[in-house]
Image 1 (cartoon, rainbow, N blue to C red):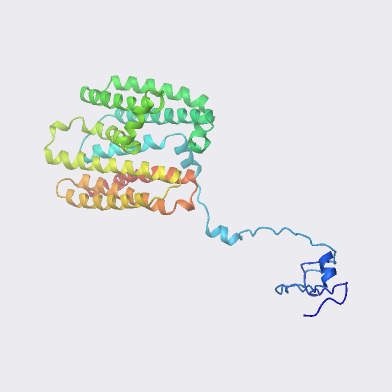
Image 2 (tube, rainbow, N blue to C red):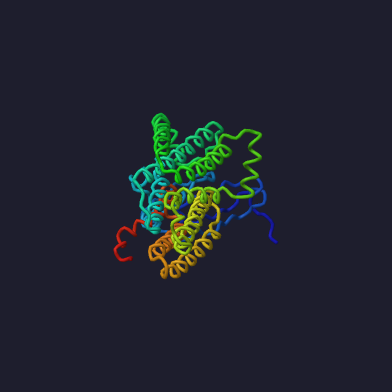
Length: 362
C-alpha cells in the first residue's frame, strides 16, 4: 500500500453537480493524503439552473415537502354538507324529523289515523331531549377541557345557548300542554315512556358520584346505543299502537311488532355507526350488522305481502335505510364529519318514498 507522499490532498469534484457540494479538508486528511471522490449525483435537468459558486463548507439546504397536485386533490374530493342539511343537523332537527316520519309511517301501515297534535307533541318532546342533551354535553366538555369528545353540533348549541335554552324551555311547556289534552290510552302509555326516558336522562347527565356506578352498570348490561334505539322506537310506535286492542293478532303482528323491531334494530345500527365513525374505530362489525338487517328486512317484507302490503313496504324502507348506512360507511373517508353525521340521519327518511308510491298499494 503506497504511503502518503504529499501533505496537500487532491480532491476531485464532479463538475456537473448542481448541488454545490463543497468539502473542506480536515487535519487528518492533510496528514494521510486522502483522496475524496464523492459519488456522482443522478443526472438532472441543468438547463434552467445556474451552477452555484463554490464554497469552502458543507451547506445544509432544506428540501420542501412534496405537495399533492391539483388533479390528486380533485380525485379525493371531500364532500361537505349543504347549508340547509348542516343547519338541519346542527339545530337538532334531524332526530325529531325522523321520529315524526316513522310515526306517520307506522300509522299508515296499521291503517290508523290521529290528529296533528300527536306528531307535533312527538316533535317537540324529541327536540327538547336532543337539544338539552347537547347543551349539557357541550357545557360539561368545555368546562373539563374535553374538546376531543365534542363535535360541531355541541359547539353550535353552546354558541347559540342564549337562544336555544329559552326555546327548549318554551318547547317543553308547549309539549306539556299538548300532553294533557291527549286521549286516555295515549296519555297513560306516553307518561310511562316519558318517565323512563327522564330516568335515563337524569342517570346519564345529572348523576353524581353515587349514581355514576349505576350508570356504568346499566351500560354494561345494556349498551347506550341499545337503550337509545329502544326508547326512540317506543316513542315512534306509541301513537299508532294506542288502539291496538281493536285489531286481530296477525294484523297487529305485521303492522306494528315486526316493523317496530326492525326500526329498533335500524336505530341501534344508526347509533353504532355514528359512534364508530366519530371515534375512528374500524366499522367492520357494523357492515355485517347492516347486511344482516338488509337481509332480514327484505325477507320479512316478502312474507308480509300476504297479510299487509303496507307493512311490507315499510319493512322494505327499513332495509333500504340499512343499505344506505352501509354505503355511507364505505364513503366515510370522502366526506366531512359534519356531512357524514347529517347523512346518517338523512338516510332514515326512506318512508317518505311511501308518499310517492302509496297509490300502488292496496
